[in-house]
Image (cartoon, rainbow, N blue to C red; front, side, top):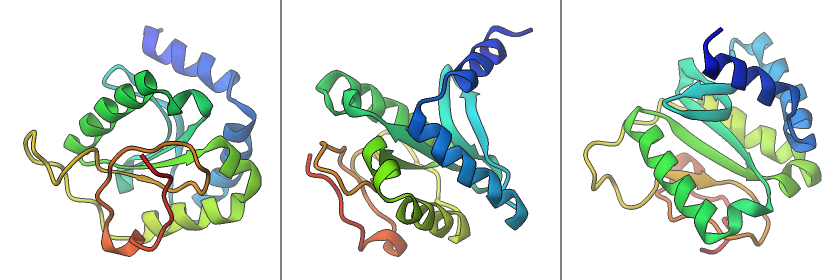
Length: 157
């Protein structure tokens, strides 16, 4: 078995509690025609959840993603994903626990929206193109929101 597949299986067996809760709801979207994968290996990364047909990545981040080192790693990763045509939605673990319905509403909105255009070149449209969809006070990356999501609250950087 390829090492990345073995690692993905290990990550699936050891998902965090918020990831397990979100996965239980994401699986139901299959009835609506959306195939969501969990711990999907992509270019050396493991995406918490991904809908490949809609080019959507969903990440559930714990408190450690608020420190500078993790934030920079996430920014690089998000730029790579954008260059490959993915939209990235990030949610804080606490938001998944506190308001799962709101998290799911944002995910469904992104799935139903037109596909996100891929990032062209290094300059892009300004910063890491990722929506921090959480309501908490943890720090977030700079972002450029599509119009359909412009009303969301975002943690300060």
